[in-house]
Length: 98
Image (cartoon, rainbow, N blue to C red; front, side, top):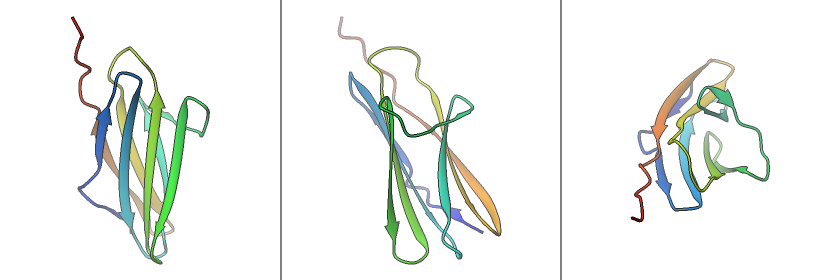
């Protein structure tokens, strides 16, 4: 069953939120992201990048282009044929420039 490492993290700038998540499993897991309960697909506003870590690992990063608005709840879900695991991430609050 895949295991998500506890090192998932998010950062925020005025224009975007970036999060990353790592998982290991045998067989090698796949990864997907959910934002506020909805599955994310790759688009111009939400960019997903994946990087293989050896034979059994995967690092996935999600960049959301948004300048304002609420801080979304992000969920990293890792799945292989033996099961799945997930990690909830929270982007830091945006500091107002006033």
